[in-house]
Amino acid sequence: MVYEAIVIGTSMGGMTALRELLKDIPQSFPAPILVVQHLSPLSDGYIVKYLDSRCNLQVKEVDEKEIASAGFVYIAPPNYHLLVGNGGSLLLSAEEKVNFARPSIDVLFETAADVYKDRLIGIVLTGANSDGSNGARYIKKKGGVLIVQNPHSAESSAMPHAAINNTYVDYILDINKIGIKLIELVGDDSWRRK
Amino acid sequence: MNKNLDVLINDNEDIEVILLIEAIWHKYGYDFKGYSKAHIKRRIKRRMVLSGCNSILDMAKRVLDEREFFESLLSDFSINVTEMFRDPEFYKVFRREVVPILRTYPFLKIWHAGCATGEEVYSMAILLKEENLYDRSQIYATDFNTHVLEKAKEGIYSIEHIREYTQNYQRAGGAASFADYYIANYQSVIFDSSLKKKIIFADHNLVTDGVFGEMQVILCRNVLIYFERDLQGRVIKLFDNSLCSGGFICLGTKETIKYTDSSDKFEEFSDTQRIYRKKFIASKD
Ligand SMILES: C[S@@+](CC[C@H](N)C(=O)[O-])C[C@H]1O[C@@H](n2cnc3c(N)ncnc32)[C@H](O)[C@@H]1O
Image 1 (cartoon, each protein chain N blue to C red):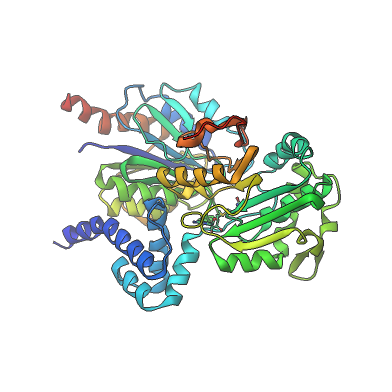
Image 2: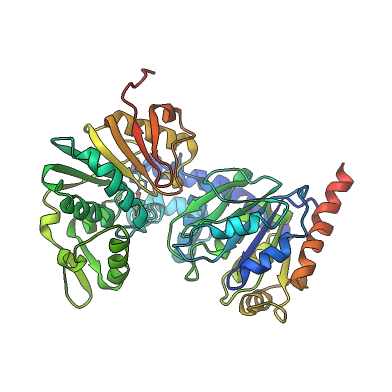
């Protein structure tokens, strides 16, 4: 399988978890990574700077209608939902909160699964609510791969638990194993294609 | 077998979305063809679940047969989430940097395009009052959704948000007491009718309606993100044609005119707050 995109959802504890996960990913990683991290609507984009200075990929806040490309980690801006449209075009919406959250993980996961279908990998990380569990199920329905952070070692276990309870999960891993698994799933294939 | 069918149906969904949009266009004259498909699809699917329809095509049939069903979809597509002094920093910059320039005009025309339920318009009315510009202003508040326009005209809002709005107002540089602008009862607040004096609420569709005056300021915040680039370009052109030289366009914090054909006619007045100013020597196209 050639995976075309990675979507990640996280809430409480997400900054550290994302840093841990992303530090293992090389710049040549062949798929874009889209992230919803629950944030205060007033937050100032610190997370982008924080992650960008700590990983090999380029981390940026999403600009509306840009096309998701390899080499980038896209962070949903505070107070906007992030949606994926055809051709990997990244869309923003200020519509109602979903699961009390904007951006909502379900919105990203569901729209990405519609576009990428079985060429999508979804990852649910630490978090103190259940946003993302419906999206996780939808990713599986569309044939994608689902990875969930091991709730026992996650800073906040509710979000991983909610996903695990809601659908079939392909891999349940500690945070320091997820990056390597991604390279195994995505990187290998691109090697073979070359 | 079932699994396969599932995939097939879902691939057709994009086509069904297009058919539904066509049905609306031919039957009711509302044009959503330039709206971003992923947004529209999400709203349609939400309505599909609520309505008990089995497919988007079923919905298209109902849209043709039932005006009310169309109206509910229209509301869905119009995404009218808004708040008072949304993005307080924007109002702060507007007050500090745009207002001094507006003072040089004897008379101001300000257009809120896509005003939804009006919170943004009353916010601006308050700001203009505090800056002593209100009396020389004419504010046009337009939207294509007549239901939200009715609400905007009333100026009555649920009390549950008022704390948040008060904070926004203060963050936006408001120095008076916010409570002076409304009267509260148990569940709702009604904004002072003097704020409405200079506001004209009107039905206007950015896709199909044209220029209706020459403005000094156009605010169109959080509307363009729902449009494809092409339509964004057409709407910015409409704004360009509706603005005096030196006039301002204020977009939402995640919107830009950068990728439109008109972009060279504007200068970035505040990049962080997405305020653009029309250049004085406008090149003819
Ligand atoms: C998210 S609200 C923005 C409200 C406010 N400007 C703000 O930023 O808080 C978007 C509004 O745009 C309106 N809208 C969408 N398409 C439109 C069109 N073609 N013409 C006029 N208004 C439109 C919707 O009805 C909705 O009320």
